[in-house]
Length: 512
Image (tube, rainbow, N blue to C red; front, side, top):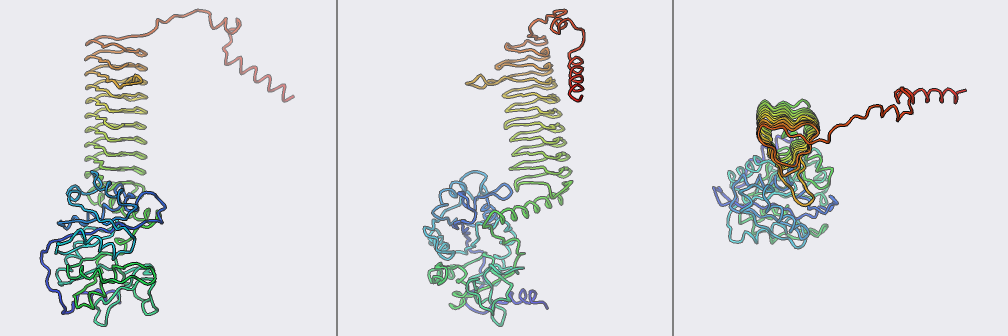
């Protein structure tokens, strides 16, 4: 039996000390988020830096919510309190149901994790249930791991339970010291290690479950002589000395407990999370041409049959429908791409709705508020802003359509511009079904082009156009015969040829 397997077997034993079976007691969760995060060198609190589109703290918060706690307490520091409370009161930054149940405990002095939890217990005064403790800077923790630890805690009737893991390099972690029977005795921090502890690879994860009798011991934790802080890790030895039942269980890979203290570690966490997202989608029938070059946020969903090419960025709450193809270098934010749509190379789509079987791009830009109906085509270098484009409508080249309502089966010629801004206010353009807009036209809003009308190429339209009409607005063309010959001094030689000949002669002389 290997040392690691032996450790796992021994952890299932429990001493017959005070404790007993803990059934479905009331449950509370505490998220420790009061760390200063000085190594981030950022004005933004560490736990609010995003991992795949969500604040770091939202991941342990979601894991906690999976337990359906009656109360959830966030411990903040003085410098981060206002930012964190504001962020977690904003829609989208925390699970919807959790937002309504959050309370905040301000740790006025940074005196360690033991002091932080003691601060949180003031918010739980009179609660009398189990408390799950998580760290706010553990974005890779999963709900399944937290549920597993709580289950072991209740099954063994522990008063204190902590999650552990086998570290590849245990250097920075607190070691789990066990007695001769394999039961957890205490946690020894890195600064207090002796040679006898150097071979221990089982370390503390920072995930705890405490019963009220153990929480009562928090005030008895003594200040660490080296760091001058109160370590929550001391609760294990205190509980054991008091006769309470304790347990420590290796419950998940090291990766899940990777804390984030600087931008290098943030990048590593985001890379792991992104891989989880992509692998989950591939299992659901999504094809990635190059999985390592796809950048997807945690809130993105893709139906089976979607194909995603390299260097695609899908952000926010984006949803991609069945059978869509997203080509290289595309960025889509908070948008819906419906079944069968194609998004061609280098297009940007923001807060928009793209209909079934539509085609966007290449090099198209849909700005917020755009709605593209079924089978419409938005082509090369076309920009749509806060507009609805009707079914089967085409705008294929070099156009700007802003603050507009465009009907079905409309053709927008190259270079068309809706002039929606008069320098003070925005105005709407309405183009009804079956209209043909010729190339290089300007539609000066507010203006309506009625059903079935034609706008001649090169027109500037400032008045409404009636149904089935032709609107044309051009200066009359005038041809002045012989003008070009006079301009060249009477020569019939084309200007290009004359210049080329002169250049050749000049070069020859210079060469001589």
